[in-house]
Length: 155
Length: 98
Image (cartoon, rainbow over the protein chains, first blue to last red):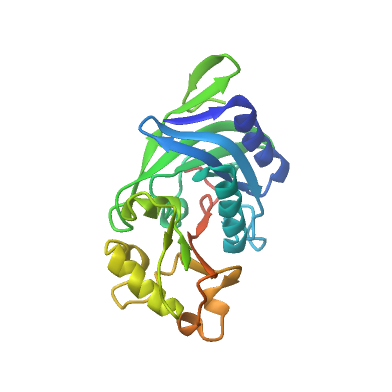
């Protein structure tokens, strides 16, 4: 399960709308426990793939180092990442899988259709190494103030 | 020196976020790190003993790949090493929906 509050959930979806028709990307900071990954804060990142930003994203390692340092200062961990798929489904692609290396982390993908955020899905990278890793559908629980709603594959 | 471990590799360091490892060079530090935590060997290095292509290593704020002496770079106890796997991806290359 991915747990995220409504404000952060909407913020990552809005990021995809802002960068449309290019892909956005960012990092999810929080904590993990037996109940899943809990997002406390999202951090926007720059997409260095300016050569093909409509269908590729890459976060500069130097920026990741700074974000990891920021997380450490907040007592948080990197628990996942997000990016958008402009005019394509919110499903992981072969490229997403090949480039996914953070086992145990959530990979959140938002489909942005004609500039509007549509479906948002999360996929948990499981396994023990590069050789046996796989993506699993991960339910998303959105905390809305005092009420909690469960969402999967809905806008 | 301190080595900062990324979230997915902490399963191999008993959950430790930062580990202190001795060594005079980056290579020595890595040797001692994988001696202390043997399971990290396969996670960080390929069968030829080279860092896996998606594993980025920063000595303080410098990318190890771009340091003149690379793994032979000497380090001080106050230096910090950060291991950070790459983050990339993107949707399909064609125009039709998946």
